[in-house]
Length: 303
Image (cartoon, rainbow, N blue to C red; front, top):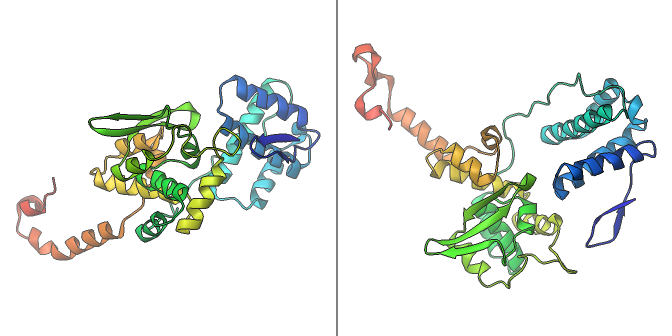
């Protein structure tokens, strides 16, 4: 049994007995090479659950076993890809350390992730949430919708060390995934609420430290009716269009290392589509008739 949640002494079910030693050594390896506690926690859950469901020693697992498991698992594309990445990482380490002869993920193709169908929290849901009498709920929603923070990033905000103020306004140091920090300006509405809070963690735990991700996630879901990540998608989409479609800027604000990840966050706004369709209806092909080389009229050229 391993206790991951230090705020509540909840012992989680451990791995299959035949995997226990290998998983324990792998987790120590991940710690040694500098993975964050959040990443290690996620990987432990994934590989532990896999070991119990596959019910074979790690050295006996085949590619067919893995494919059958993936076929039976009720996972979305992102979760499926994350699981394969975890198992691939484990077996790369296991083969190197002679704990397995082959890597069953070797012939597993990359998991395709479709274009985003992820929800974007609508403005009326955000407005409703911001009217909540619970201050922690309001702050959680603002951090997601106005700054694009992930759940665990919200829990790590420390007003003693992460807030700066100058003539331009308040800025926030965000502790991102993989120890990749970034700094963002804080909108005035959020800054005004933050200044009313005591120093220390923005969301302090009951017994020292800070709250867990479930604390803010539940408040966001209850207040908006949408999952927390829908606020981050809302921030990405609004920022993309308001910045003149500056994908690199939005990627940096979200803390992504690859703009292709950012592209999956950006949705289509109904007003953008409507404006485009109305423009197409107003400007007919007849305007191009008789022009040399089919060049469009000057009024049609954008930018």
